[in-house]
Amino acid sequence: MGAIIQYIESYLKTKDLTPGAAGNMFWALVYIMLVFAGLSVAVIAMNWLERKILAHMQVRLGPMRVGPHGLLQPIADAIKLLLKEDIMPAEADGFVFWMAPLIVVLAAFTVFVVVPFGPTHAITDMNIGILFMLGVSSLSVLGIVMAGWASNSHYPLMGALRSSAQMVSYEVAMGLAVVSAILMTSLNATGTGTLSMIGIVQAQQAQGEWFIFKFFPLGLIAFFVFAVAMVAETNRAPFDLAEAESELTAGFHTEYSGFRWSLFFLAEYSAMIAVSSIAVTLWLGGWLRPFPNMLSGNPWDQIFSLFPGVTFLFFAAICFYNTVRMPKHPLFRIQTIGLAGFGAVLGLIGLVLFVPAVSTRIQDIFWFSAKVAGFMYLYIWYRGTFPRYRFDQLMQMGWKVLLPLGLGVLILTASVALLQQKIWHP
Amino acid sequence: MVIGGILVITRRNPVHSALALIVTLLAQASIYLMLYAPFVAGVQIILYAGGIMVLFLFVIMLVSIERSMKERQFNSQWVIGIIAATALGGLFIAVYTKGRDIFPDGPPTMMEGDNTQKVASLLYGQYMFAFEIASLLLLVAIIGAVVMAKKRI
Image 1 (cartoon, each protein chain N blue to C red):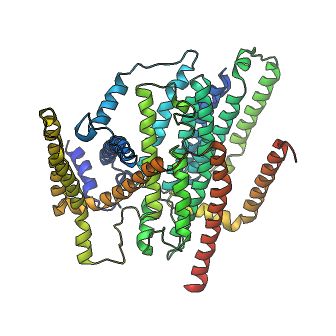
Image 2: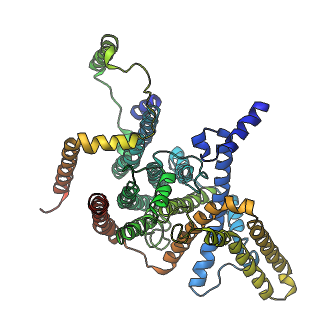
Image 3: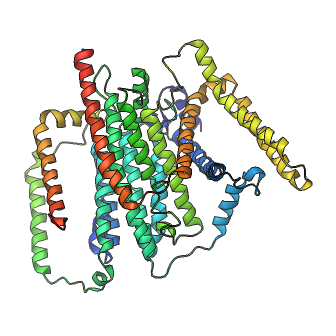
C-alpha cells in the first residue's frame, strides 16, 4: 500500500515531464480521464453553441424552450438518441455495420493522447507526435468507408465513397502544410527540428514568434492551406456534400439511428477539435499567451494571468443579464432560477480561477482552449456563411489549388530558411 | 499479425479480407514500434493503413461482390502448393541455422530519441540519389496510370 502511494506521488515530484514520458501509469490514466471528460463537455457545448450561433446568424433565436435559453437542449438530444430504436438494415453486413462507428470514434479520440495543453499537461509526448496525429486521424476514413458499405443501400455507399475521396485528397494538402511548419522548428541553434507536439510549441517560444507570423506571408499561407484542408477533412461546411441533408439524404450515416448515429456525431466534433488543436499547436503558439516575447515581464504577466477569471466572470455577467431579461411569467420561474444558478456556477469558477495557486497551473490550458474555441467559432461561422461546394469543385480545389499552394509554400519556406541560415545570420 | 494474415486469406467476403489486412498492417506498425523505429511506424499507419487500404476498399466496393462470393472456392493445385511452401520453409530454416551472423544479437539497444532526425539525415544526405530515383519512379507510375485511364490522349 505504501509502495503504491509512493509510486503515485513520485510523479508529483518530477516537474517537467508528461505522465507518459515519466512512465507513470496512474497519472496517465488520470489525465486520460480528464481529457475524455473535457472533450465530452466540449462536444456537448459545441452542440448547443452551434445551434444558437447559427440561429443568431440567421436572425432567429434557436432552441429556447428546453432549458433557459436552450441550455438543456443537448441533454434532451442525448436522451432522445439513446432511447431511439436501433435499426440495422436487412442484408447488411452485421459485423462491419457494428464496427464502423467504433473505428471512427476510436480514431477521433485516440488522437488526443498527444495534444499538448501545456508543457507538461499532455497525456504523453511522443517523439513522432504530429505524425501520430495525422496517421490516426486518417484511420477514420476507413470507418466511414465501412459505414457506407455496410449499410447495403446506395445513398450511404455514394456518400461514403465521396466523403472518403474528399478526406484522402485533403489529407495531402494538410500534410504539406504541416511539413512546412515542421520545417520552421529546425531553425534553431542545433539545426534539428522535432516532430513532438510539445517540442513544436517550445520551438515557437524559443524563436520568439508564432509560426503563423514567421517569414511573413509564408507562415500565413501555410496556415490558410491547413485551415481550409482541415475543414474539408472533417466533412464540415462548406465541404459537407457527403452528409448534407439536401443532397444525399444523410450520406454515409443514413442507416444509422439512435446511439450509433450519436457516435458518428461525437466523432465528427472530436475530429474538429483535434485538427483545430493541430492548427493551434503548429501555427498559433499552442499554450503560449498572446505576445509572449514582445510584452513580457512582470506587469504584462500579471495582466494576462487575470484573463481566465475575467472570462468566466464575463460569462456569468451575461447569464445574470439574461436572467433579468427573462419574462416575468410564473411559468418561467424555474427557467429563471436555473439560469441564475448557472450564472452563479460560472461566477464561482471565475472567482476560483483568480486564486494564484490555481491560476498559475491553469494558464496554459486556458490559452490553448481559448484558441481552439476560436477555431470552433470559425467552423460554425463557415457553416452559416458559405454555400456548399459541388463535389467536382471540391476535388478540383483540393488537387489543383491547395496542393500546388502547399508545395509552393514548402519550397519557398525552405529557401527562405536556408537563406536566413547561410547569408543573413551565418 | 499472424491471425490477421490468416484471416485475410480465409475470408470469403473480400471486404472482410481487406479489414483483416488493415489489422495486419497495424500490427506491423506496432512491430516497428517494438524495434524502436517510431518514424517508420507512423508513416506505415498514415500511408498503408490510411491511404492504400482506402483505395483497396474503393475498388472492392465498386466491383460487384455477390458474384465473387457465390463462386466456388477451388484448390486444385494443392500438391504444388505444399511443395512450394515446404521449400520456402526449408529455405527459412536454412538461413536461420546456417547464416546466424546476419541477424543482430539482441533487440536494438539505441533508444528512439532522435530516430526521425537520423532517418532524415541519412535519407537526404547519404542516400539522396536513391530518394530522387524513387520519387522519379513514382512520377512515372502516376503518369502511366493517368495515360491509361484517360479517354482521349
